[in-house]
Figure (cartoon, one colour):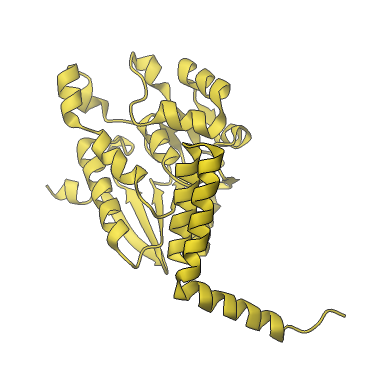
Length: 260
């Protein structure tokens, strides 16, 4: 279907940066099965594409994603919901080894909030709003919300939001430690792209090993996390990029004028 082919728009606004934009404006970017499939496929391709060092995920200027497409699921039974196998699409994004920047404008609710929580950096427009309101519909988060929100902001603050289903703004998300930055709405995309371009300018292997150490270390003991960090640090000394970048840094410092 022509509509299915345009569910995710992609472009490359800067070297090393792939921007993916959800494109179901008529449904407030609700996460239909087709949209989930399209987004997962974009991530699969990005992992293998050497041109991509950092991925920016965004919605429109008015909405990031309003949640799951309830029209698809509201009459389904447990077996049918299980048969959708939605977790396979989330897993592609969760397993992405490359840094992800989410640029959030407008509502990011339910599955939209969970999608943002899959990012490594979240830049929120001042007019953005977040929430996991599934409890109000007689269900609960099913795309990682109960796990990622607790890890992001802590048990007691996350439980309040999960159990009440309340929506909160960008400034509150910043206070809770859920977003990386809050910017004026008009500055959102440029700021997200600037961050992504800076990230993409660094060694791709360094970026991936940093992400790996943070995510794997967070689910292990401190000793195991420190060991993974150290082994990854040592591994990078076997790359040509490390030799070149360190040599260039030392050469620049050598050529710098002494302070007076």
